[in-house]
View (cartoon, rainbow, N blue to C red):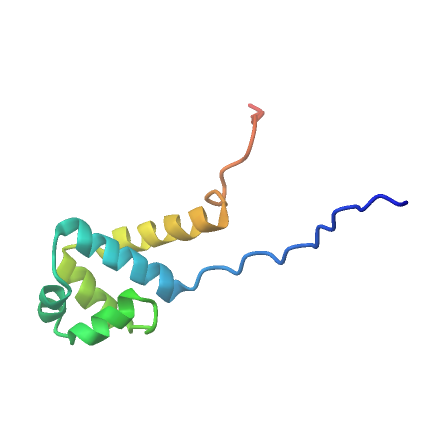
Length: 109
């Protein structure tokens, strides 16, 4: 009788995370680290708690003004927020920042 060989179908590559999902994860993690309640941050940002919840769950694509308002309510600078989100996306994709070579580097003088 013939041997049965395992079949390993090619897996489709993981889709890139959506910006709104990475933003939401970061905002929620920041809020929880600070010990703030969703309603408190929403009030300081001038938005409804329901809308902030949808942003944190990656369901809504907020405007830049809305992102700035929530970041301000959290006491986080936009530049720091963007760097954190980029790091999260890179980690999920298993990539390194662009421009950083892998392995040994030979530099000519």
